[in-house]
Length: 232
Length: 232
DNA sequence: GGCTGGAATAAACCTTCGTATAAGCGGTGG
DNA sequence: CCACCGCTTATACGAAGGTTTATTCCAGCC
Image (tube, rainbow over all chains, first blue to last red):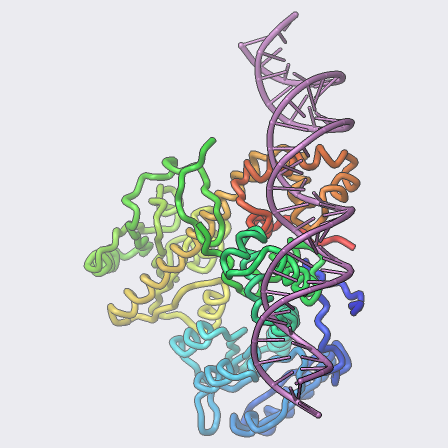
């Protein structure tokens, strides 16, 4: 019942689900390299390792898709020319799955339209060979930083979603209406209950969502994207 | 004192300040072309006009900076090679001012690093000459769409900001603390006032901000970026 | 049949909110 | 000087929020 005291931005939620995905030593960071040239793989690997990153190497998109990738802040380094699949198609495919991670392209022969497509699709950077080591490292660190930020945001939202899913149908209904600014009395009328009943559900919502105040609850509803707009 | 009744998404705010910036016929859209080649300017102008856009032409960055640009959804079409200034520098300069608008680059001789820089800096597209008419039109319409969306968001926030600025110092203080979830009594303790005083300010805040409920006010505080986090 | 458990409700009670009335203080501007 | 505005407080009252206790109804189960 008592939630652990971990500071969270703006909201006093502490998602349980800790201890579940805890397999990596906290602040580990991973670079994933997909390139069909073994010598390139090795060179990149040693470069990336030199700044303390874990590295995973793959020779093809298919190999990558089949592997299990550590669930830590990470970034994909990709040659745009890959055996069997264009790097751009690969990028799109990755973005569509839960293997989602920032992508950095390398190329020896790319053109501008290709670059534009990649960047529009959200690539972190697009490096032309030859490039300086530091360029790649900067890009990878930026990508990993992006991924860490996304993870943090997702983590908060997921925790919230998990709590919200523990609410009964009525409780969810009441939460939505209360957060849209209606008084208990109005909520009662809206869904055909007595005011007391609404109060009880409301209390249960506050407890289950671990909200210390109505303001807290409203922010949670916002983060969850509940329909709190229509009114009037 | 009484605000006009215009529906606003999710929040029952109605910013006054209407009738001030009302100089353009509502849904007008503008393409701004900066290119030192007169024949290119003319060709682009007639192309863009053909789909109903207003067009402004400039031969140089300096000329553009000196002109007054209509305050409507708009988009800048720019050759990356400009007299006196690189298109990229120009882009950065524009982003820093209130002339801020989406940028589309055209180039006959660009390279990939240049493209990457431009896209990272937020360019909508980067077209290599020769390009098909439709490519440019698609890009311009996308850019204008972005600008319209930004304007809409800014408009709501600005309206909110304007209301917030009408609050006295104490009222702003109370609003922040109330929206962070504190009870009147706690707010009073926090800033050394009696509870009644806080209640009065709170009421004035609700009235001045035109908030129908606490939930409303909390959402406004969020949109305004008030520090509602620290607590505990 | 009888038991259990969840949903919904009522009554009672206390807290918190919100507003009105009245009143005191200090600075600004006509 | 006075009017006005912002800031402050006290008292009082009615409305809304929140919890507890107890009761009813109904569905599922041994």
